[in-house]
Amino acid sequence: MNRAVFDTFYTDKPILGMLHLNGESPEAVDEWARREIAQMYENGVDAVLVENYFGNTDDVERMLRYLQKEYPQKVYGVNVLGNPRLGFELAARYGAAFLQMDSVCGHLRPGKRAEAGVGPGHYYGMYDSDFADWLAGLRARFPVFLLGGVRFKYQPVNSGRSVEEDLAIGKERCDAVVVTGAGTGIETDMEKIRQFRSALGDFPLFVGAGMTEETCEEQLSAADGAIVGSWFKAGGVTSAPVDPARVRRFMDAVKRVRAAQP
Image (tube, rainbow, N blue to C red; front, top):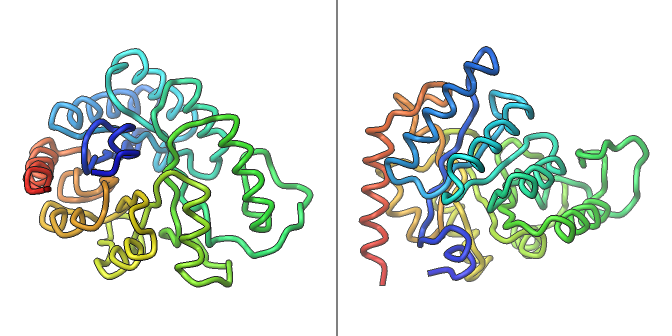
């Protein structure tokens, strides 16, 4: 059992269900999201992760407010794509236990040179050392459990460092590293998971994409938890609604993994 993970999620090998916020209007987004939140929690998911994958930041804030009011006893978190600073602020405002950032290391050029014109929530115009200072300031101000991507899906690799070097730096910038394959819903290669585990030692590692009912046993043998989105949807399609039966089967498989742990 990884103590830091257990203290945040209250279980070994936690599964974080992704809430993608589909809908053509705020009312439709709310109806869809509230139904999926209930379906995930009721079928055993350990935490809900609110993300503006299809929706916008207003949708994210409404759902965090809803979770704080209706599910105060549950674990939930946030990932604001394109504006991680807002993610920190919303996590603090609405009692989120954790925050995800798609990249904390590997995506930026080495060096230090603060550049003009970088918005308050964005970091792609920064150099890596500037980003490190910026992130450290946010973490000092908003102490929330941070899941950080390294060599994450859709992110460039500009560091000029080895994977092992990026992971060593990533450990200093977050509370758990997230590993993915090439894209959303695409299986994360087991060789890459093992490579990350070897480099990280006992530092928390989450699989961030592509885990399925069939692969969870092998992948969770090396990882400390997972973020699951597409697999919970009808037919495994990211834009489809959550299928409670798929959630239940997946979580039953995870329970078997937990039961087999020493």
